[in-house]
Length: 209
Image 1 (cartoon, helix red, strand yellow):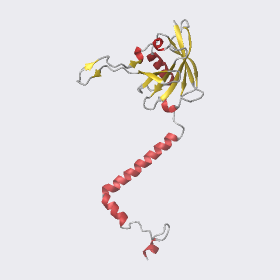
Image 2 (cartoon, rainbow, N blue to C red):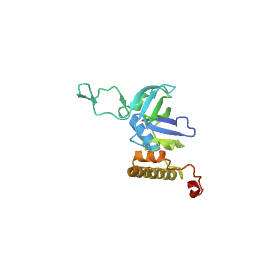
Image 3 (cartoon, helix red, strand yellow):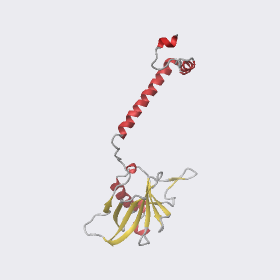
Image 4 (cartoon, rainbow, N blue to C red):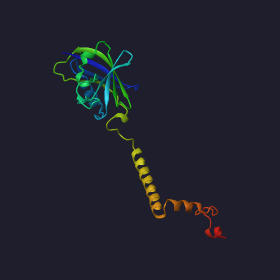
């Protein structure tokens, strides 16, 4: 049995790569799982592989989830109608015809966090080794795409304090409206409730004279 060794990079981030080894008869679902587990990605987020040319231009998409059935216009259910490709059906060896075969792995199809993957080597499988496996690992990925991002010290506390302050002010406004009514509050403002003739810090008796 032989293995594929892939080098995976993340967008234009320097100091990050993963070397991933898989058996030639394993699927893109296996590939997806080892990436997701190693990077602690959220399994509920939709992702996909893309078969590419030598310039990483997309050719075909390998979808993550296979629907149970496809609804037709007459509301009848038909299975296996879609020509889409799915990870668990696609064996790696069936989609590698170049010694430097390239793929894209896109995590979160709405935001399109993009990993660039290139075949680096084909070699015999090591006796007694389990595949897929991470053969080399350098660097981390931005915390915003990881499953459990670590907040910066102090930032979370400041945001919570600001939220509490905003909620308090909104509560005061709602209480005032419930007592006076929105129209009455407008009349108070128009009637000169705040006397601009009285200077801040001045004597109220001076303002009356």
